[in-house]
Length: 84
Image (cartoon, rainbow, N blue to C red; front, side):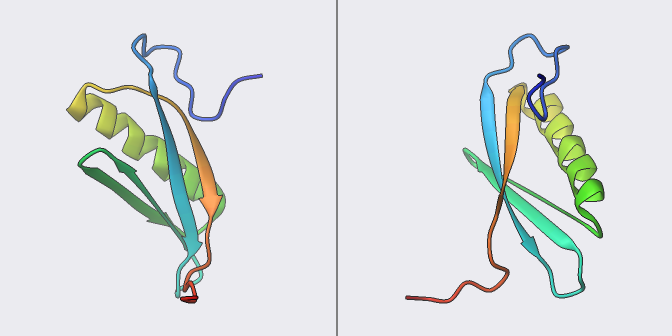
């Protein structure tokens, strides 16, 4: 079984990324992750499109930073969390 987001072409893969995903007001989805000083963000109309956009964001991050991503996961959060 292959891990989601795994790219066998990147030999230095070492980062595991967790994207927080929330439904946005327009009916689509947005995803955000923090990698050190980098904040990664993307949005899409469907979950399938969102996963494709996340893979694109991770490819750009790896290319610009030189840090490969080993895997990623999605954590679904409420769009408007309620303070306790």
